[in-house]
Image 1 (tube, rainbow, N blue to C red):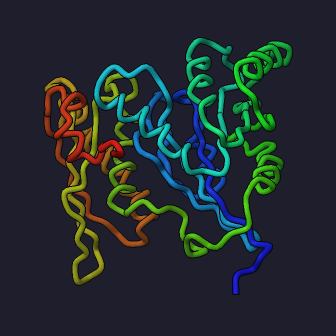
Image 2: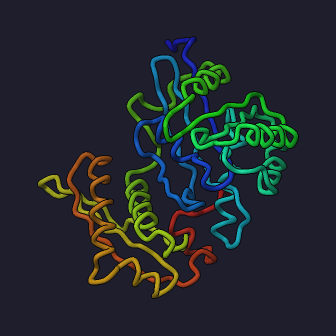
Image 3: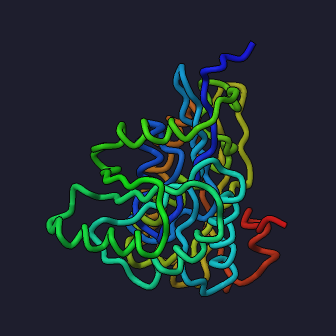
Length: 301
């Protein structure tokens, strides 16, 4: 018989690129379920992080940052960001507390004004704010643009005030069942998580040299009789110069990407892995719908 006091529900995290949505989710789950990067528009798909206690289960959906689309991939990312808003119990609009309210925020407010779900304003990176008066002026602009049920000031990096936010989120969750087993922290398949970890290392290690024209596909994952997981991964880029950067001098960059990725892959899979990575040039892949579909970037119908 279901415990009638048990609460469960779905919460979408939305906002402009690079405001800390993935860092917030990873802090909550205490595991890496969504990759983070200093570069904007790192998240491309909906990532579900499952937060479970004895009293509740909340499924958080980390969405791509809403931005002005420059290509088919960008259009897919915007559609992906808005899709879950139709079905969730609560929306968290996360903003960078160190940045001013601009036209991009006004566009997000316009999109959110069309939904009927309660919305919290979450001012993230509060630990970096130096001018509190400027912060309050920006918050006032957010409230002029959209109605919010509540406003919270947090730091995803330090965890500051997140328990207070979680307490408020719980009040907006209905009574419900366990949607997932207690120990499950994401609904993404292992191959997706592995591909995302490799992509994260590419973004970190190449810094500004490689734009977001990189994608990773796992060609195969097979465990041998001795328990070693053999992984074949393919990194797509859009030009020969990008391929050269990822491989590096005498293969040094490729080796470092593999070493760092393998360490985290071992941790999430719980087994030792043999990781073989290849790089392939696919010119203008972000504008090719067939290629996007193969890479898993297929819009909902």
